[in-house]
Length: 361
Image 1 (cartoon, rainbow, N blue to C red):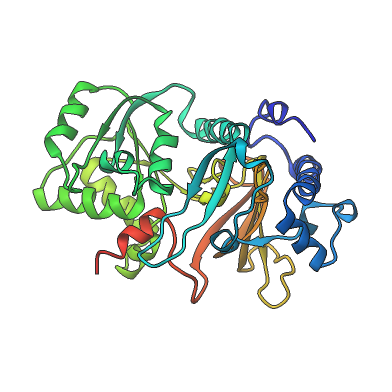
Image 2: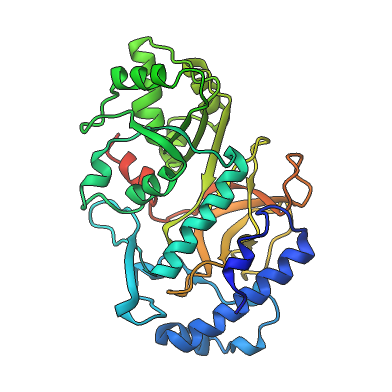
């Protein structure tokens, strides 16, 4: 198998289609063979559909597992004694949660990959960081799932961290203003989950009639669009309203999931989500799961080089999306760029921000 440390030396958006497909196919076919040998349930699933790893020629042909399967089965490709961490998705009361099992190597590669991807948008220097959430999220083990892991994962980009919300999810305006005064003149990194930013940060600033100066800030946010769409808040309006209350102009949404932690899809300056060299997206037709063409809506499949301790390298999500193009985004980054249309009809609400948002009717 290709050494992942060597792959990490490649710039995340530097390979054109042919180079990227060759690299991804070689790595992912080897991962498929590894999981086939090491994970009994995965082997039985591939045998059931008549697929042998040695017959696969490209990653487009690797069977994909539905993400919901991780709620039903414990899928592990290493000895249980090697499990370093169990990641769980957030779920509403009564919902099963996805579980992915990480050894130290996979967990370490997830963090290294996240750094490579995000640094392409923020730069390599660590910045003062304002987390638009409550510190209790990482203190309370019952809440420590995708939401807590997301905060901890992005915290590596912060040199001095502060939380904008208190333990009761109320905006701590005094703490926020003190933090901004302390770091006046510096570039600030903000991170949070989409709905919480809207509900507890934007709306509260409007209610208090306060305007903050974050004109030199960078906001990274993800998840929770379902509730905002229900409130008729579009992507563009979200960005515009935040600019009104705090001057933010550099706002980056991202798409990702706990089943493939580390390989997130960041939104560029032109508003497009991008696949790095470490992962890719394929959209598939619901009728026969054949690949869609550019501009054609379909079910999103995600592939990732990262999962070695569990067979999560090729997954079919419960989201619908459109691939807009490849290697020709005006931002200059190579690879596919796309947009997410929304959840498939009748799919469960998922995601750390969406599941929190169901409490707000």
